Length: 167
Image 1 (cartoon, rainbow, N blue to C red):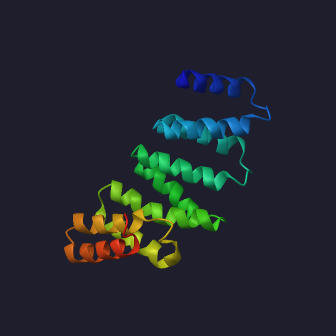
Image 2 (cartoon, one colour):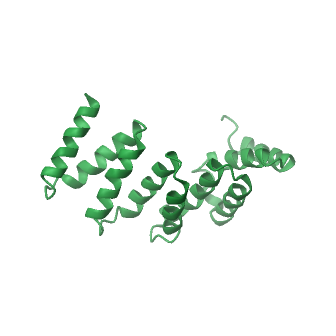
């Protein structure tokens, strides 16, 4: 029934594009699709949103979500294009998150040396953000290990454990 409901919402958006509920509904169904792992349809909804509501202050956040979905789809090229755009966003929070997520793109591509570089750059640029993104020091340590930088990996893991002893 869940998928049927989303298809009905898609139909209503197509039938009533000028409805006051269209903006909210697009975001809602994109979010639901992301949560269910249907990243392809989530990207479709998010692209529709950014095309229809170009002047919305939410666009940078929506593009961040879209880049994350593209990463899950292993569309590394498109996700990097969006992240690079978001690194220049007017929103400091979006710039910060994009800086950390670029490392994830290279990690998922198995380009561990570049992942290390981008994680370290983001940590240097946003040192107070380490509490927001506990996965970054862990991913950094894992990338270092996979790049056979064992001593650096051990140092990073020790730092991770000192920051997050209950993890």
